[in-house]
Amino acid sequence: MMRHSRIAVAVYLATALLSLAGCGSEASAPADNHADVDLGQPPAPGPAQPGDSGASVAFAMDRLFLGDTDRDGNKAAGTWKEYGLNLDGLVSSAASTGLCKPVTGAEPSDIYPDGAGGIDNSFGKNLVGLIATLLSDPSTRVSDAIANGDFTVILKIDGLGERSSYNPLTAKLYGGATLGAAPAWDGSDRWPVVPELLGDAQDIESARVVFPDSYVVDDTWVSGTQPQGTFKLNLTISNNTIGLTISNLRITMELTPDHKSVVKGTIAGVLETGVLVEELRSVIGTIEPSFCESTGLDSTLDQVRRASDIMKDGGQDPGQECNAISIGIGFTAREVQLGDIAPPAEATSTACGEAAPTDGG
Image (cartoon, rainbow, N blue to C red; front, side, top):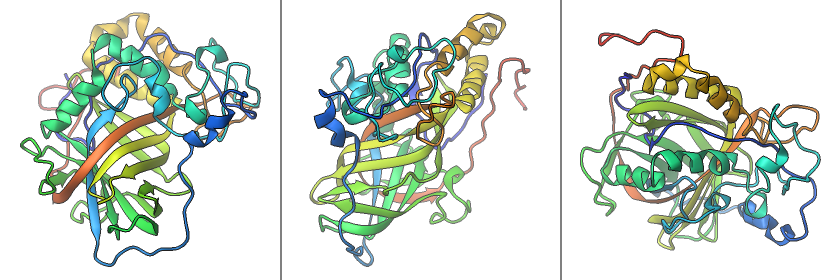
């Protein structure tokens, strides 16, 4: 079995992936979707308005929405359409053209249409529903883990005061380690951060993921006009860890007027298919070693590949095979304080074809 201690972000899910397929996004929107195009894009930045000197707010995510519920926690079909952004700038249907080529065995009709306003979220559409058939109420379980103080994700925004608009602001992304108790959510929680997302394990200001050109427009914070780098979101699945390496990362948050809470947040980006397949191979081998010896492993991983709907740069190329899977996750958040830097995590896993580690390994 895998040993793991602290991880950058822990999310409690089930494991296994069943029927998936698909690809694409589109050059011209169908008439019935045309009015929704702006829904998949955050607001543009306003005029220059420097941040407030000495002001800073750290938001810890207190609920995550993976696609099995709406933002009120109610189960409803198609709620994945609410999470994510229109990464490729296109609104797609199964008849769309100008898209990357589906992976062998996939059909556009298996993955389209896009979500509202062209939201790209193949992960939510094709993976999370599957997970829910194996582990009931995954979003609820994730949020319960946060409520226990097991983990969180933290965004610290420097210069954020009470004005409704700012441009630019510098923001930093952190992983919250185990708090050690249930959070009070009154602004006093000092949440320790994991060192894995720091450039210097002794310097809490050395976050690896930085949004130097973020901005606020009418109380909506946006990470920037362009995707910003890569973020490895480590997920714990049935006490085993899988990393989701999200590139072309974009985050948006609708803030309360006092800027102490987030009422509607979105994480969006892409998962490079080849990387995701290897991450899943490791988890499957750890959780159920016998599955490595069956034909089910290769079949499952092929199904993951067929979920590819986009290129790893976040765009489309009709001359190339799709090589990435779009992802969108919703969240809410509340004000906390950054705590100490936690000790580094130690994690091992057993990929299929490898020997399991010993207790001392």
